[in-house]
Image (tube, rainbow, N blue to C red; front, top):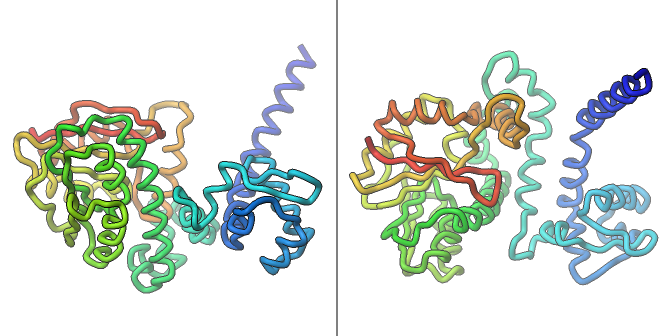
Length: 340
């Protein structure tokens, strides 16, 4: 019995140690994205000294970075000090059709925010304004280089999630889908490709029009999908039979969420439905990505992830009703909503 108790204490100690060091893999991945090492490995394995010369890094330090990331499946050490990409690391390439490099770089913008996140714990408000001197969206407007990373990152994330939704939700009967806050159209593009008889509208801030129209044309959707500029905090366009809100509501406190939902309610007719693509936080001790994403959106936006019951309450206040919650190929859910 004594040996068992000792082993349990040791396991508990190592679990806490691993949790406390969790920032290490994330920062290592960000560094690899920042120096573009995956692009240099696109044509095959290379020696660390060669890669160090191409990235202006210290050979031994770079080796240690690549070795660490090889240990979590991003790279592979094919020979001593010679590395190649894995299928995971391949998506760090900027020129990969399924690249997630911008998403990784976007996360790096908030390292300083996490360092000061005690502010959010004390106040319940976002930490970003304390670190950046302004809200995130104001910061993205005044720092266009960060705005470009944000827009590219959202496009990458939306592409992945669009593919997941397309495989989990039957939209084949939809006449027109309106993606509210649809960014550059990557999310809706994936859905329209899976539903060739459907047309679409990407609705977002006017400054995203060029990026969206370019992506829609590149995806062969210029004739089936249009971009409409506007602000969902003011209005949502009518005319769709399916409306999408992907990763929008968690960025906002309840007051603004109610505004968005009420604007959607005014746009819906009796046959329309609204699909919320977001995290649904499970109750109790159930491990789930949403619980740490919830902290991230608090620190960055002042928003929150919500439980099913919290969604039901907000929807009812906006004149809407939750009909079902669907699982997807990702950890995100689809909440199907109809007018009351």
